Amino acid sequence: MKIKNPISASLSFDQNGIQHGFLKLPHSDDSAAWGAVMIPITVICNGEGPTALLTGANHGDEYEGPVALLDIANTLRAEDIKGRVIIVPMMNYPAFRAGRRTSPIDNGNMNRVFPGRPNGSATEKIADYFENTLIPLADYVLDIHSGGKTLVFVPFAAAHILEDQTQQRKCEAAMQAFSAPYSVMLLEQDSMGMYDTSVENQGKVFISTELGGGGSTTPTTNRIARQGVLNLLSHAGILSDSKILSNSILVDMPGDDCYLIAEHSGLLELTTGLGQEVSAGQEIARIYDVERTGISPSYYLAKHDGILIGRHFPGLVKPGDTIAVSGVIR
Image 1 (tube, rainbow, N blue to C red):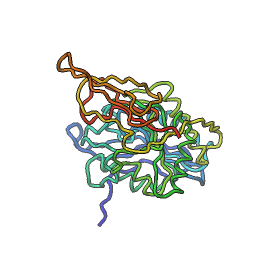
Image 2 (tube, rainbow, N blue to C red):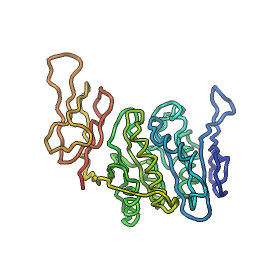
Image 3 (cartoon, helix red, strand yellow):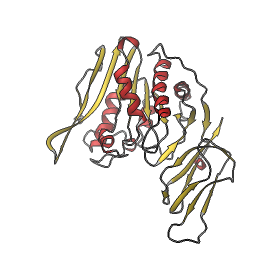
Image 4 (tube, rainbow, N blue to C red):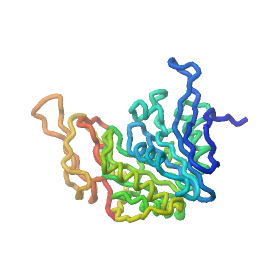
């Protein structure tokens, strides 16, 4: 017997017009014996057409997605679209409310628990609801990320290399239509359990972003996020009045050496800035021993020619932290 997910929607996914409501996840804790996690959701429908599923705060300390999607949920009109737009501005709502990457309820990382479980932890239940209810409704899926509190990136939209070349070309076209300053064919260090992978496995057009970081937003990254959403909706044929003007720089990540990983603890000094070109063997960073003076720093060098697209944000690092991320301009 199939286990039913306990999450219920307070709105219809098929009703024309604009609806604002909640995904209600029953949750009992010390503050409410018969309580619930109320995840805000907006559904905008107007007749036949494609469906776009738009999400932010997959990680709770990444804010460009919530800023852009809360604004678009307030301003997008049903008469301006053809089809359906499903907006979940704060996908991992408990993590978002706590200002954490992961959920304070179960320490769940939403982007590592897919496909989820209907009888699992709170994070797994949310993932299962997306896996079996929301993703199947969608033709296009956009998940807006940034670096959170520990990373910062040049603003980019991203797609992945897929076995299905037709699907990959559609994802690449959507990525470029988003029109971020950079468009990256992103090589994940581990794609198991990711929302991205679940969406792609269902054959949908999927793109994500990394739009800055450091646990906050900027006027520039918020503008890129808002306009990128409208550009994607226009590309999908859902919205007709957005003009896509893309001069995005295309970047590939050809191998694991695009990730520079710390092997020492200490104080980090980046000696190359985001967006700067690097050459193989060029110094990118230093890590200083903070236990005593008089010890030379450990030097970290670029492993290939390319461009720096991401970096560690806090000043202190430990072994295993990603210091820098690089790519190759196509």
